[in-house]
Length: 260
Image: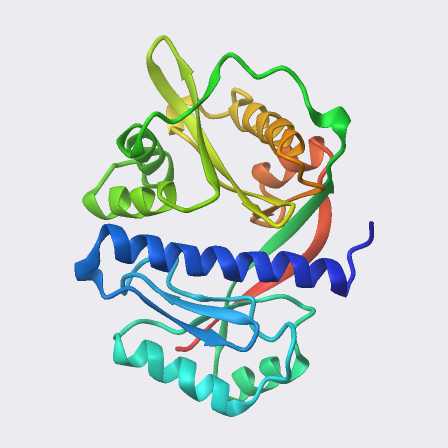
């Protein structure tokens, strides 16, 4: 399998779908939030809350040509909600979208590496006795909020409850003697397993817990019939190294573009 346009289309369409799931889940759990979405060509412009890290455009520019009118609509969508306009774009996206955003003064906010790994029956192994499915939203949200933000603030918990509620998603925890140390998720989309939300509470880091969660999700995804797994990581991070040690390789690097 090669890191080519067909692969990028599959990965980015799944990312756009999960973005839409986040909006519908947040709206169901928090109807007062005014969560909403807008179709942006092949992508999804998601709004959950003004400051939510899930408020961004995913998967844009991957199929049909991008027109400036599309960008006008996206900017108006976010401006009406007093939210920043943030595009997360694959290098396989329509070149015009990069030109238009550059002309509009968008600035680079970050890069992230999209990794992938084919799955086979050999990935199915016995379940890890230290890893379990979270029993409910609170059981997963509290340790993951602490892992992501060090303190489980109301906003952090709201984000994690939304993530827990995503459809076609399994939320895992590493537990020992009744305590949760780390967690992660796997989302299933048309034979693709999206690994996300890897988090370990600070005092338990560097103990191999993320690697345990990666191996467990590989097994679960292969058992579920998936043929491919993917994850996004910060370039050069310990997280990327952990994924590469489990056979993942780089598909491409995405760029986050933010309207100043």
